[in-house]
Image (cartoon, rainbow, N blue to C red; front, top):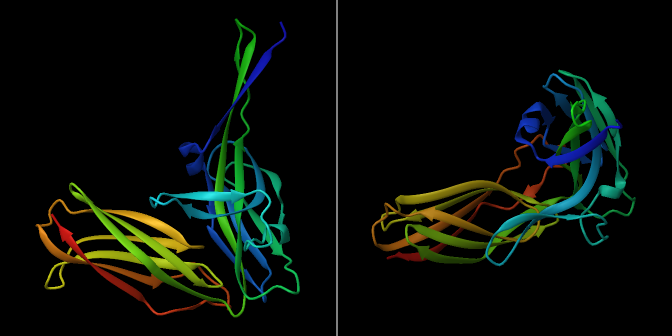
Length: 272
């Protein structure tokens, strides 16, 4: 009997994520260093088919502050994309168990390129090479392919690269034991702003009675929602303070960003 092979594809398997490791998560290149590398490492006991591709994308938000990624198959010239300038070697290969592969990238920007930071997302697809699971009684073989797409970032920077951020609006709404905070961030300059963000609810003496914090790269203007736990906060009048500090954590080239000073914004809040 002729066997029938069934294929199924599952994306973003948590098990695969622990098996194939990408490092670093951000690769920087600039005018002096137009070459970059990252490593794909196979921690499992089976072979993986690896493929490398590039796509442009950035976080976006809706009016409620819900953030998601927006990707562009064919980004226009108005977007800060380097996808069409990138090359990677190798792009398709078999990664043996407990082995690693260095991926070398090069960028070829146009001579007329203006100053600033541009980027692309690196998509590393991993598919384990597994034999079909055969059912002798039915003659049907099922081959399940677990596909993992890990998305990291490559940036290209041309001097002078500057960045800054502003808070254009802060709105609050109390919902039982939560204080929902909607913040609209406006990025300035020609580069993303890597922000350490801290939100503190301060009493009349300046003591923090509740807080939230996160690290967030602000690539383009975005609105973000925070939900602060105020279940243990007494009723009364408070000050909500938002502080943003530029913090580019990764190893960067000589073309370092010129960030603006720490930004602090405050509004009065009444807890009922």
